[in-house]
Structures are given as C-alpha cells and as structure tokens.
Image 1 (cartoon, rainbow, N blue to C red):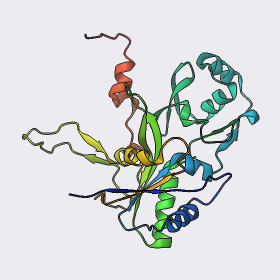
Image 2 (image 1 turned 90 degrees about the horizontal axis):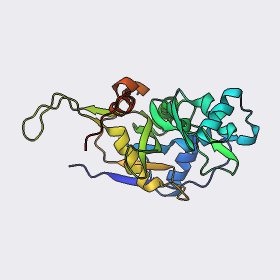
Image 3 (image 1 turned 90 degrees about the vertical axis):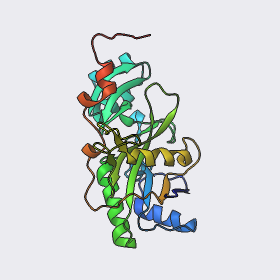
Image 4 (image 1 turned 60 degrees about the vertical axis):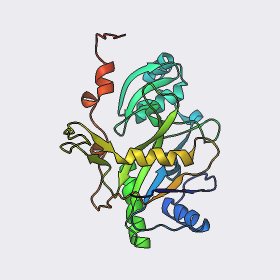
Amino acid sequence: MNQVRYIPIKVPVKRGRFNLYQTIKKAVEEQGEEILDGDILAVSSKFIAMSEGRVIDLDSVKPCTEAVKLSAAAHIPSSLAELILREADRIYSTLPGFVLTIKHGVVVPNAGIDRSNVECGSAILYPRNPIAAAEKLRLQILIELGKRVGVVVTDSRLMPSRIGTTGIAVAAAGFEAVSDERGKMDLFGNIMRVTRRALADAISAGANLLMGETSESIPVVIVRGSGLTIIDRMVETEDLAIKGDECVFIRGLSQQETTVYI
C-alpha cells in the first residue's frame, strides 16, 4: 500500500508577471525539498494566472450593453459582468452575486474570475490555457531537472448540495487524470458499469487542505508516493471533463418538469 505525502511549498506574495518554473524551483530549494521522479506537482490556477499577468484592474474594464444587462440580472458590477462575457465558454443562468458558467470544461461561477487574494479593485482570471501551462511546466522540469513528474492545475470549487469549497483539477499533465474502472469487479463480484475515478481531482482535493483559501501563501504542493504512472502524452480537457448533456447534475437540474420525491 502506498503512503502518500503532501509537501507544502510556501512562496512569497508575488505581484506582476514572473517565471513560474524558476519561482517554484527556488521555493522548493529554499525549503530544503527537492522534486523527484514520480512526484505530482499541484499548482494553484491563480498562481499560474498571476505569473501570466492575468490580474485586471476593474476600473479599466469598459462594459458593453450586454454586460450591463448581465450586471443587472446577477446584481454584480458591470465591469465583472464584462469580464465574464469575455471569459466564459458558456453561460447557463444567473442568481444574486453569481453567473453560472462553463470554463475549460468546468462548471464554475463567474467564469472562474476571482476578486480574493488580489489587490482591492482588481480581479484575477483563469490562466489563458491551463492545459498548455501544465504541460509546459512538466517539460521544463523534465529538461532542466531530468525528473519525470505529473502536474495538476488546481482550483477550489463549490460542490452541489455541499457547504464549503474543495479542490478540483482544472488541468493536468504527465499522468492519466482519470482511472476507468468499468468492466472491473468489486469486492462482491459485481461488474462496475459506470465508475471512473477522478485521480486529478483527488490529488487537488488533498492539496487544497494545505493550500487553504486565505493567507497561507502555499500555491504549490508536492504529492509524493501516489503510485500514479507518469506518461508522456499530453492530457486534454476531454480527459478531465464530460459534456453537459452527459452530466447527471446538469441534465437533472435542466429538466423542464421536476418531480420531488419525499
């Protein structure tokens, strides 16, 4: 049985663009840690976005007519509504303070745009391309350090019917993000017909315990001993997410008629 270790890597608060790989490498070394073959690096999506300069001054955003309408419907600033329109892959609905959207295959409020842990009056967007960012970091570690690792780009997310947030994988690189259990037998000989294990999400949830949500300043967690097989092929969004018409939550909640069973 594998013993899995989660090693938090603290990084000083960053402002402006920075070199993601060099910053992580320096922080790991300063803590007396190292990156080993088989490690999975969980990296905050916000940290990656900051390295890309994805922090926006809300006063600089000029809302269009549609943004003003969305702002009124969701009771949010028109500048935020404009950013949501620009960033969202799909918009589902609104409720006070939120716009329910799809971004990079994930159901997420406000297209993943966040106003916490940035300067007052600013907002931070998702990384431009989380999959590409994860793959780039994986390759840099392979080329510079000679280590074959996996990378998970993490974010915190609300879950249906649950209080609070948990970690979720926005992107992954270097390992199979999902384990297909279909066709296997359980302890009692029953054949598994639908089960697939979200390995990247599981890694993210564990890392989220250490990363926290407020002043922890731990945007990177090294996950060691996971037993996951490191691969060289690029992990795509389709490896992590399913389409809306295949999602039981979206399908169930979008039915025109709903029967409540008590």
